Length: 244
Image 1 (cartoon, one colour):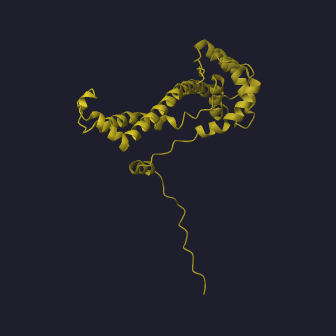
Image 2 (cartoon, rainbow, N blue to C red; image 1 turned 60 degrees about the horizontal axis):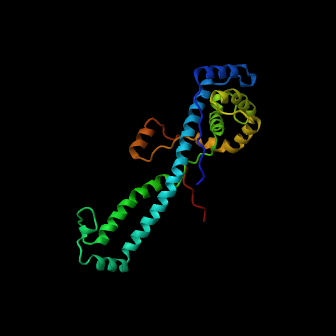
């Protein structure tokens, strides 16, 4: 497996941040921007890089876990085989089960002892793969610059008083020119990188802004709906039967 590059967005120092904000304030095209929303975007980009780095590290663990899961599955299948049981019975006929195991066994045969051991070892691998193996994060970013642009796009309408479709590229290039150096991220090729990021990430960021769904729990639903008024719209009248 190819080695993954570590993503890193540095938290700006106080001097670097003040210098960046001074740059924002000199840009007419950034008029009305929300400095707190920009700072929050930087924090989110730092966290996003940490999440992606963890996902990269997990990828190898997932690969190895899948191999072990397959080995355990094959061994458990073999232990269920009648031929295997017969062979193990012949081998252990004149020997105590404790000769094969490091602890006193309660199982009636070596086959049962091994099968229980294999299944107990397989369980945590199954749990791990169920948790992490189906989805390795779902984040599209591969560089620190993409992480910053992703978070700026996601929070764009909190940063600026205009919608994303209104001259977003111009504003993002302007703010990134001052922000990226403060975070020790390269500004090379921003004029090309920003339109590409808008094209690649706009739908991702829209999905990321969706509200968290309420859990389907009756008590929670009762509390959630406690202060909600009933739907004022009257029910539809039943259809009248047609004339014969």
